[in-house]
View 1 (tube, rainbow, N blue to C red):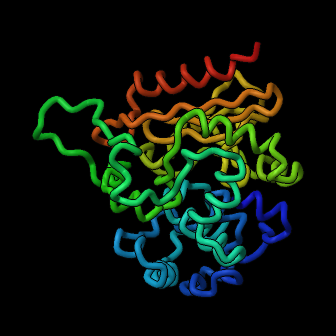
View 2 (view 1 turned 90 degrees about the vertical axis):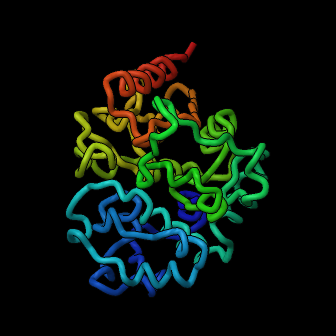
Length: 299
């Protein structure tokens, strides 16, 4: 969505976020730029936003103001697991007049006829529409998932709230077709896609492995998307071209497009370990093998 706004001249990545969302400025955040938010270098990777604030825009805006910097903007590459996406959602609404979910539906999913792609599925419509999360490693009924991992998405209210970083639902086929649409549909200007996939930094993500840090390979960042680049970090396939871009998610999810081969691919799963992430040798190899085999399907 941000790439679309850039292509339409509605957003410049050099803008300060506070100029778009004045409520965000307190506590020294007035210097944070849109580009820093999009490259996970803005300085507030763990800024909190609980369920009650998700459901109410005024509470979200008040929370933005209370957020504090953990390090100076631009000073460190560390994945902002949910905070950056909430800001992006508000930026889209300020610049278009549509909520993030409505913009996704009206300007992208519906024109492309990708009808399964949806954010904010109402609670009453989730049964039969959204595959329930399933534990892949539960050995007894007494075991409980880690509520701070992706399992918070198992709460129907969170999915209905449309948490923009993780609560989108879709079929794998529609996600793969979405990647094709970026290149071929005409909804995005080619120069905007080129700008979105241009590598801004290549570095080891900071922080604990469970939060996206500690990768043995460096990760290259475009605008809110990982790019294979020289190291193919963050579980992107190493069998594609350096221009391949996409994202791998917890625990067994992956989507990417290789503009040099024309191949797009998506793997989605409703199976999760109780911790939410699988950093075992088997879990890491599983996603790596799927990614590499998929990227090699060019004939």
